[in-house]
Image (cartoon, rainbow, N blue to C red; front, side):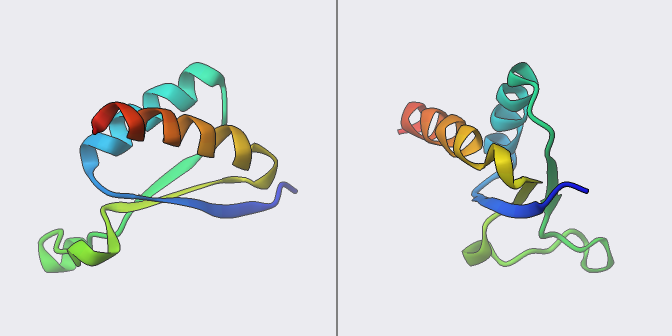
Length: 75
């Protein structure tokens, strides 16, 4: 069984879409979980970010590199 870990906290839905496309392009398995709770009308605390990206630990460096690349283009 693969070691799944929390890799990065995503700041927004838009950021999650861009990172999702990049990781699919690279063939890296992952799971994105938004912090919003449907019971509260998708409310989330902005200081926590939009959600979290979970993935096998052996892909950590490749994911962080992809995340840095998209973060640089946003600024």
